Image (cartoon, rainbow, N blue to C red; front, side):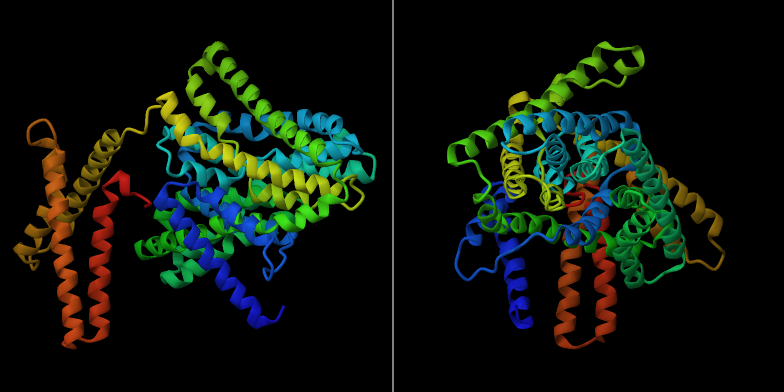
Length: 526
């Protein structure tokens, strides 16, 4: 393809991604399903270039920034609190899925070996961080469920890829179970170490870098650095990226300036939006090539339909049975487990959120040419991805049916007010220590007034709630900010100030508007 044509298609690809995603959100459709559908239809249209999965490009080029961005948004405190549940799903469920799915594939798919069955099961075992985020982002789930699902999808890729490597080795050679266990331990240990080392080194560098542009540039290369270092040392690159992201996300208030944090959040939100949604369109565009490759090895139309339905049913049933059994053990087991148990309704939602994505599609193309029915297995992997995405799209309806309690926004607002009050009290103490005789009293009075608003509203509430005071302040200050921005823009249009002054004032106004928005949990990260 000519360079000019390539650029044109990239632009078309991005425009279609944005347009379909925006339209889906407006009409209430599932954006992942809509993008896969549009991509699948387009793949059969004349003139659309045939897309072929380059698994190494996906695993090395696309996956690291996606996982890193998701890790930055994930609370390491919450992950640590739910680490047992996350490990049970990210390791235990993947292993069980590989075993059950491997035998089922061996029995259901004509002409494949048991090793090939295990390899295929390893491909379709892990849930996808991008897909899970896409289907749960707009669903009012309890924070615990969200943490477990995000943690599982971030960590189970490492387990699945180790299992896949072992199964691929079994296809072409003899496998030593002890060697597989040793490789898994090595991959995890090196991945964790490489992720921590990368996070520590990059955090130290970014601590002394004050330029948001330089800081963001370092942030963009960090996931690739963690992945490359870990893979070079025979560790799990996926796990290294996740660990580095969790570490840097937690250390961000210490190692970055406020400007750098704002810039990084905006940049990663943009990168995540484009990559997350483009991935689903990319999955759909592979349909024509996958179907043509599978025609020669498929056992026939009706047997193929039966196999597809059976494989998806096995995967869904395995996840449901495993999660429900784990729920039972936690609720009926020793006291230590009962203290950390979750409800049956939470277990059902976790079972239903088993969407697969780009990792599955990329991993199936890693199967060696010697794999029996390789093209048909690639087609089955595509079916599994689409079927689980469609199933996960019904998650909002399931949550409403189960009457699952949403996150308590009132509690979060109360916690925000209390923490903000503590922070402002510390600021007032520092003000008294730092003020000098030459500081004007009106400056001190203004600083005190701003810092004591939230504290006063908590200690001396209006009626039974302190919210009206804060709400009134936020509402009026936002209206003031709108007029302030309009005045600055009017002055700019009249040419009465330099562009440098205009930009500086607009940045200050934007920063305060972001601060006001941060106090509303409903708008956080929107």
